[in-house]
Length: 233
Image 1: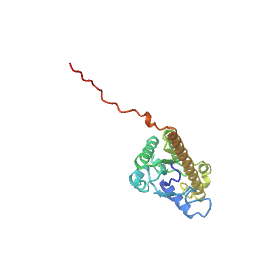
Image 2: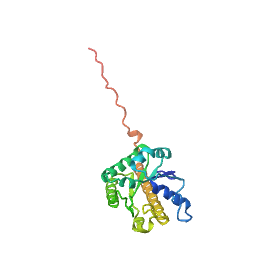
Image 3: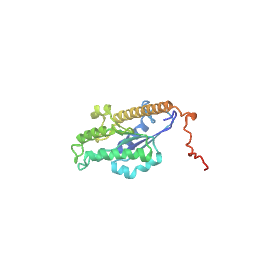
Image 4: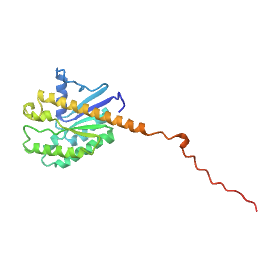
């Protein structure tokens, strides 16, 4: 990306997104920056709908991506899908992969940061093995995205290490402390992404500068038509 490029960041997904946005707006702590301390000019937009799955996101939320036209997208989705015990984890991983490809090739998203599927302190009754399914999904996504240069699976180690202390009363969403660490984790993800894009842009410029222009006097002249001599007998 050229220097001074105006990035547009979209945080897209389910209820974790709008809860994080509410926390950021209400927080008075100086370390909680509404713009994630990103270089200006950078636009940030949150769009999270409670209960949304990958299917609902594809059906109802792609218009937000088309309208906002993000260069960087944080994708927080997949937890509600895993609550369906009939859905195969492998199928969900490939649904997410297809969604990432749609963002990049159809909507011009330069890089997608896929949030780790987080464990729950109280697993759904209809899906008691939720946490093991979440761990399996993260493992499959990590393997798939290794070959995708425009997407990254981002883990939240500080959140998961202190998970017992970070959950709200419903034992699914985060409390104030949890959202505080959640904010800082995505802050690190965005700054890491910007450094990655800057390195790619620098390497691209270096490659272009090494290509010496073809000298005009070395250009091959157009081939002339064959000349035939006339002989008189």
